[in-house]
Amino acid sequence: MPVIRLFSPAPSPGAAALEKLSDDVTTLLGLDRGQCWLWWQRLEPGSFHRPEWNGSEGATAPVGLVVCKESYDRDRVGRLLRLLQERLAGLLRVPAEDIYLAVQRAPAGELLVRDEVWTPRTGDAGSGLGATATTETGAAGAAGAITDVVPVAYVHSDRREIVDDDWGPVASVIRLDADRFGTDAVLGLDSFSHLEVVFRFHRVPPHKVQEGARHPRNNPEWPSAGIFAQRGKNRPNRLGVSRCRLLRTDGLDLHVMGLDAVDGTPVLDIKPYLRQFGPREEVVQPDWVDDLMRDYY
Image (cartoon, rainbow, N blue to C red; front, top):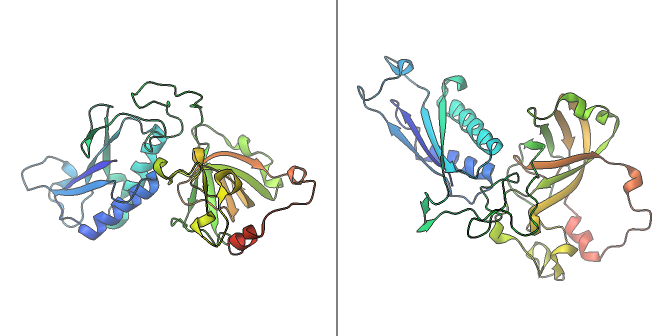
């Protein structure tokens, strides 16, 4: 859980604004609401030296310190910093480039939260997909773990709330990692109409993962089904596979429609959809699936 301190000679923007900013952070990081602590510290005249603040009237850009677990990978921290910069600039009506933010990482064994000294565990929500898997004792390399999976892109969308239906009209941008890829990585992709996207259900906490059977969407009117006999998001490894319509490519931005992934979703792979990979035989499925999917798109 990140702890964020903001310093400024200006008054606080208010508790409601800071609560909203905290919620935006937990949404981005896939944490439960309330797992980001944030406070504003107003500095008294004569208690600081920052030339940009001297003699300023009205809004001033703050300086911030973010404390997070050392297991947060660079991309996750970078997205957190950009989110804070964007939200603070809009909230305070100050230039984004005037906001200064620094990160302090808390090493394993040096962070006490809720009466527990933090040690990385397998599936730690702060570890990121590219981090090394660890056991309860902190030993690296849980049996059979795959530790080299790193997101290739992230979803950008106005859809931030996790709801089950009405994905058809949702427009999104899948933005590829510009530090790893050039535009040649998507050469020819615009000649396809649809994409197949593999992504991570990053906002499902590990303790909510289902490994047995349950009623789909917890609806008792539908029969209980094993987690591998349904497409619920609370599944082992928290991986999603979806198909969506490709509207256009713009550099490393893929504009799509109907992708059932919320804003900030890490994308693990992107492939053009080929009709030859569709079923060659008649598709058979139980009746409850038709009910479940009636309003999905």
